[in-house]
Length: 265
Image (tube, rainbow, N blue to C red; front, side, top):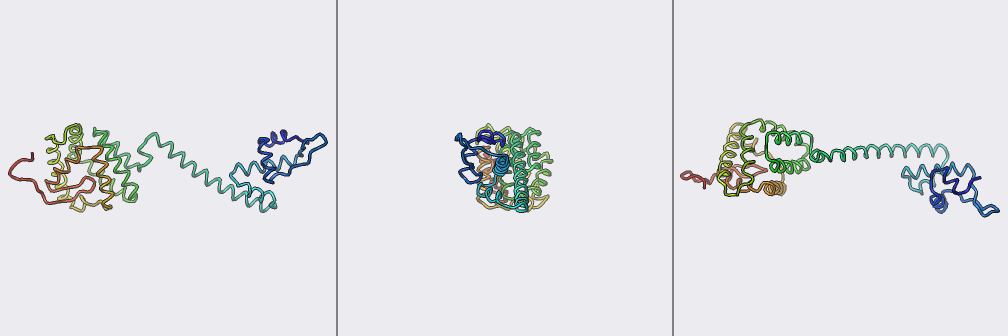
């Protein structure tokens, strides 16, 4: 016969837990002996181990009470169901662990691998990190909005990033980041960008240039992210509009308002 402390020790729980299970009606509470102590037999140890195991598996105590009263077949079926649920939880927690482990790489937590590769390629080419961040934030929104179209957009980006003209534009913009909005270099950038877009539209068609199907509020949000990260980009878009194109996230052709008789101030 065991004291409550010995019972708790054999079952791997605390005395407080034993008393709690008594209060919940899960474990019968024996009468006190002539010395005033409650004494438990080996059967109580087995029952307590069952209670502990079910409780640790996340089974509500009310359900534990039902299982303890079930016959062997019912108990086996219930345990199989619990095991199935636990395995599903383990798989889910493993996915959570994988996501947490990817936090160290930052971008891979929120972006598909092909986009992360594209951003790394920009860095390798010497593009300023602020521009890369603007691209990254835009892709985070795009991937969340239309994940099914990411492969299509990335295929186009990989094609474009192989064009030395676009790389030259990125590098020139990188040099202009710390300059004032009125810096003449932005005019040069606007000329380069307009020429590049126009040539792309002529070669691939305007549908190729303007094929970002998304709601205007999302476009505006992405533009704001880019302008906040790369302030000269706002002035650049103003200059670009005079050259027949507008938009940062979504390019659109507009009527050119650039004077032809005098150079752009």
